[in-house]
Structures are given as structure tokens and as C-alpha cells.
Image (tube, rainbow, N blue to C red):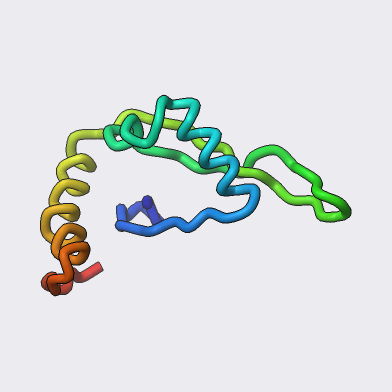
Length: 95
């Protein structure tokens, strides 16, 4: 995620209507495996209403993944994510 101009690894957890918006987006691009070579932008979507509750959905868009970001993502995957998923302790990274 680009946070104030700095790219950081993040985990996003969707629930409720935002999860539905995400699932619709994933289907529209042909499945989750078609997401990995792209940057995904999330913006405020249209206003919705369920009962008396009004809320905004999410709008997702794919963009081209620049090579330098792809390289950073691959490094993060190799150095931090895969060791974590395998139960190993990775070296701390300054952020």
C-alpha cells in the first residue's frame, strides 16, 4: 500500500458489503491469479443503503505494476512472507 508516498506491505480484511465488492472485482478480472501482476487502487464507491443504514461501497481498479514495485514485492515475498508462512522467524525490517 502506498502510505504517504512510501510502499508498505499490508493485509486488508474485507467484510460485509466491501467483501462483496471485492469478490465482484475478482470475478470481473478473471479470478485472483490475474491480480498478481497489477497494482490495485481502491476508492470510495457509490452510496448504498440497507434498511436505514447508508454507506459507501468500494471501487477497485487494476493498473500496471512498475518493475521496481514488482521487484520490491518479490523481495518481500522471499525474505518476509514465505518464512512467516512456513513458521520461521524473519529478520526485522525497518519501516
